[in-house]
Image (cartoon, rainbow, N blue to C red; front, side):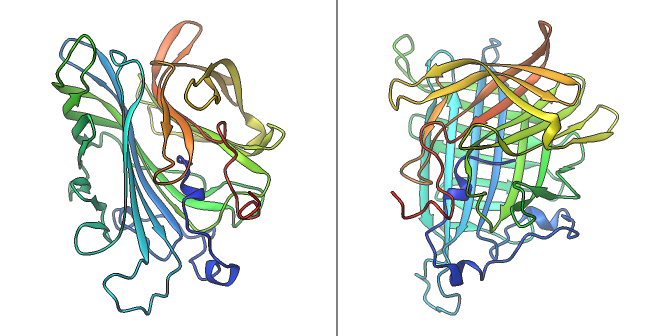
Length: 367
């Protein structure tokens, strides 16, 4: 997937330094489980988990937990334990209709001293008390104690990982180097507990046992988006029949697609890839944020080949302000998937570049 402002999260670097990062190239397949760990020679990396949860009284909730690793370009020969070679950033969010708006928190720290890290070989990412750990059997334990809410979840695979693009090489633009290594783990079974925020009706926080389904993306890259790109729309959907759908559109300044792609894996495991001309995101309804003034197409029609999917939000206000960490304001929320009025599944939709255009390499320094 393309997640939040990860491409814009890196520290500004001179061209000679930026060129020292590892490149994403075709013909280098993703290999698991070893590639579930960190890749510190690449500029930017993220582990991104989202999903829908149900409480015992059948109230729906949405959750998002993301850990970023960002290489700064600092001299790798620096022996100091304080050398700022890698940054670890984390976002967490809860969509609770009883609250009526997204509640979220964010953290950022330099890697080191066992307090913040992203380990090699298997997913093991930590930022203070926030953790995401993949175990040998493939399940993940996620712990986030955030401001006003908590997420203690176990994500258990029910299907094989889905390699995006060409065996994990996922194009994001018209040039081959505008790409990432990318795999997804859809249809995760989710169990655990959530501490929900206090509200006017519920003056104390509420702890609930939850079950549900989740989606995990892991992606790493060194190349920023095309200079014409201002943002993207992304969808990850768990469908009721066991199918999984990923689709994205990188938007240019004129609103048209700089690049687009979709992958549909059906319940039998057959994978269909859709190219740039086969994928469309069409707004149906917009919501305007009273905080930032940004308008987001929170209800969408997504076309993948001959199929069209209707997306409608769990609630409109799922805007996340990450200006204290990765620097972007974006909409990221739980949406339902339907066609002709029939519910087909549940998903997460991400909308970036609507509050402010993301800064690509050629934009930096202009503002």
